Length: 102
Image 1: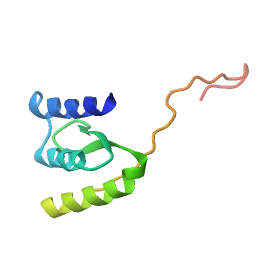
Image 2: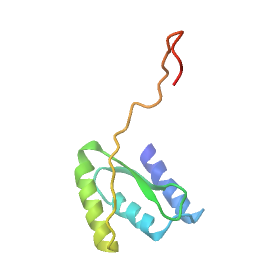
Image 3: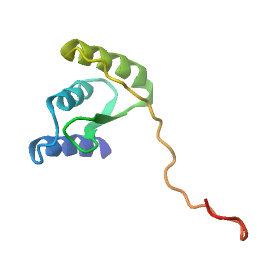
Image 4: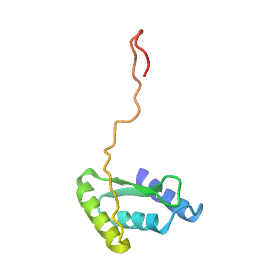
């Protein structure tokens, strides 16, 4: 499933490609210990940036609060945590014959 793929991907980015950093590794470690986490990994170009965390809907509020508190108490940094609900994904739409494409 997706959760283990995210976790394994982070380990590979950290260990095989060495493009992570201690702050991202800590964020993933803290996230992984939280109830409701499905998977976590760093994202972006590496050497800093952000993580993506797939979390069960019912656990999001506690996840945000606990991750922010633990990360802040460990590093002295306040993380910015954004919640983005999953969408239905890619869909094909039909345009009317004379309608311009966007």
